[in-house]
Image 1 (cartoon, rainbow, N blue to C red):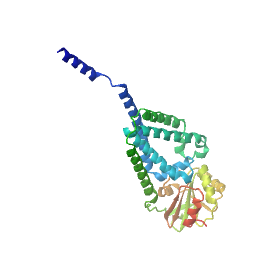
Image 2: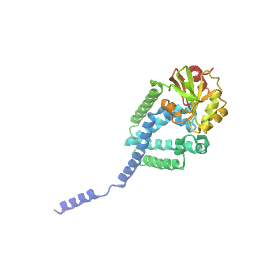
Image 3: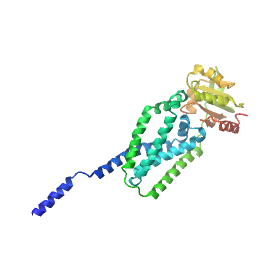
Image 4: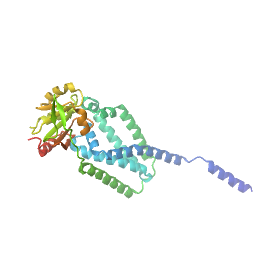
Length: 312
């Protein structure tokens, strides 16, 4: 009976004994990993649905237009890959290392361009002013600590081949989204019948018309206007100030653009051709959208305008 009593006591001790230190370490690593899974996957999935818009956002943080599409694809793939690798325990160590590397790259890029991004050069993009600041580095610093903890406390790496196949699948999904975004059918967009230029109506449904949206206080808009002024136009050029409308005439003079028809009908035009931030332009032919212009980098700008027959 005494022996049975001792066994019962031992079992009770084992049942109530606290978890081993190794168990707490595993739980802590898993918690750090899961805290990082959510922002990576949410960011990656969201960007996957707005590939072109995200590409434009990269140019607004000084990524060259020529590299913006590749950059957008790589960032989306990176976000999704980090999230998926951190989610699966067998791949968590690799996911933590990859997540840490991504964060170091992002923080390094913004640190290198911090003064420019916080200065007048990008002040016309509200999201950049909101996103780039000391709080960016604090938040990413916390995420970096979590990523390092997830990698350090993760179980040994297993099933590497399966992880490679998963990354290949993420690549395929990203490229498919890119193809749909860039090559999918465009909706038929019609321009308003007329806009007011001065005190007269001007038709947007007769032949070719180029409409340029600009903020007179935006240096990016000024650079885009100067680029547009280098061409000999074969289509009427309509200018639409988005803010500070009393400065529009001076802005047009500064760009060197000639024969610009200024209209203040921003609301009706933006309803037909929605966009977030200028500079932005649309090429219209017979009242229908032929081509949007979110970028104004040469020689691509001139090549597309000549292809459409808007400039000589």
